[in-house]
Image 1 (cartoon, helix red, strand yellow):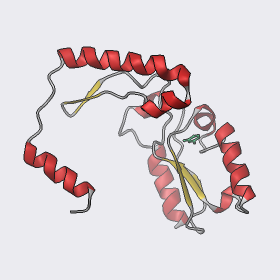
Image 2: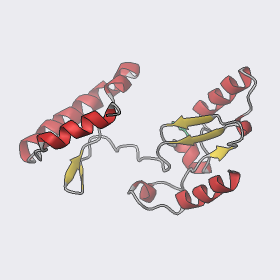
Image 3: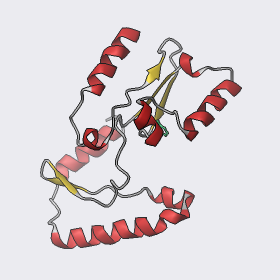
Length: 157
Ligand code: URA
């Protein structure tokens, strides 16, 4: 298993499948051991993770280490990684881009603005930009049958 993880880490370090690798210093593949069967999955590397190429090494990582220690676990005994393996640029939200003919428009999660009220303005700005985009970019129409099938898949049918 550790060999598989090492091979996967090499693949992640060489990955150029999405544009995030261009702005990141390096990939953050994840680290630790699979032996315990315990797996922690973060969102994406931050500034410190990008510098060191290791997950959860900043302030959130210190807190994670403390929380693990409080329940008798050492970080080396669990596997820690992120959904996204390259640090996203500061301002990824509010910037539309086209992928396979579809417009992708990342915005802050509304809950982010509830937790950090300072983000409220940026979130409102993203939605104002979204309104402008919707006024100029035709929204592709999805076939009704296709949508129904996607929904059913979500619920295991
Ligand atoms: N550090 C990480 O590596 N991932 C997070 O999601 C947060 C902090």
